[in-house]
Image 1 (tube, rainbow, N blue to C red):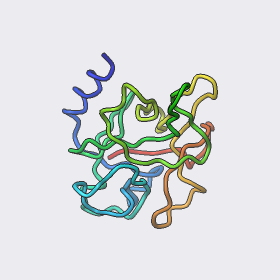
Image 2 (image 1 turned 135 degrees about the horizontal axis):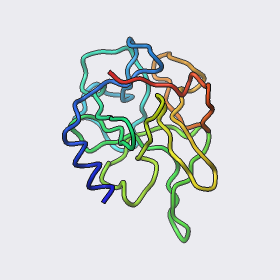
Image 3 (image 1 turned 180 degrees about the vertical axis):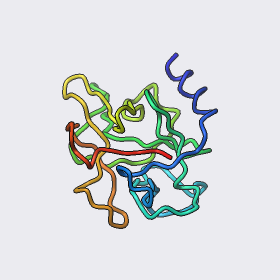
Image 4 (image 1 turned 90 degrees about the vertical axis):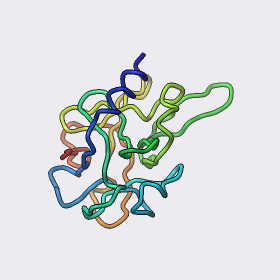
Length: 162
């Protein structure tokens, strides 16, 4: 039911830009291409100078959300996905954010975020909350996004959308 609701809502969400903090000159972007049609599995996401490219347009809304590359099947994904006898999602500090097919949301955690108070967070029952995090606060070219344990006043974990 949650998947149906999210996919239905996503169909009507306008493309937005995701910014680190209130820096409107930097936008969430895909590493290695400027065309959404060239995106493939496990490409990393980062912040680059804002430009009029399809890889900087995302579908996001407050509350429970995907961070989906607009008009595509690709969502920001975090954590390591375990296979085998104890499958599941294993978040850890420093795990890079990457793109993964949105359709696997039911089977794997790590693609559904809570976007509240300008933070994108994921709850893991045993380990607590993990947030999208700008590694070392570095806004240099191609510095990738990562997961990190959430901290209340960490400026590297604050984002805005426009």
